[in-house]
Length: 235
Image 1 (cartoon, rainbow, N blue to C red):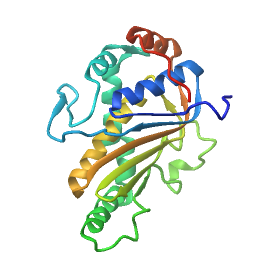
Image 2: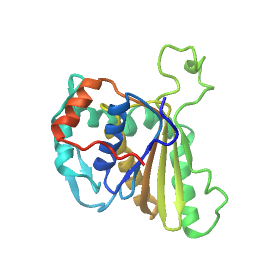
Image 3: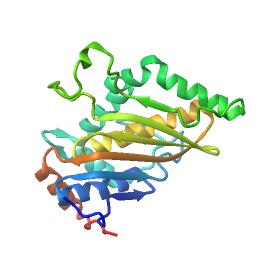
């Protein structure tokens, strides 16, 4: 177990750099409780394509490291495959169905539009999407079920700050070698989309992993060595 003095918060302007700082920390320690990754400028230009093959538009990336991640073999699949898998999960798969359930995302976007016009502000702290419904029959027991229920992503919380919109995601657990980078990219895409729909400016993207782990520690260590990354600085 780490001491409370060790840094568990890593922030950078672009998505790729913020991710690599957190990955280095998890690879060094094996696992981290309460790891926070913040991207200060996840969206920089909503019209510019930054990755044609993955259809990424307007995201702030370190393109050199991004391409190296895409080509690396993580647990038998390429980084590009893992990125696409996480994007599909949020926009067409389990997470999409969850945040669309009971019109959660629709409520958030409609409320933001109303807030923008000044019609009401009572719901500014309720711009929240929950990714599971404990009342559904297949969630008969959250703790004893063999499948990961609730899912890794538990909440999406949109926070308005004047004319900016921030997005905070909470994960009960997250694989940082295979899934975390694609998760950050997909969340940045969602933030961009919601901002476009509601006329807010994209703010910060904050991802909180209650437990950050590795699916294959050797893969992660090899990848970090290939990039010749420096060890993370501890505050």
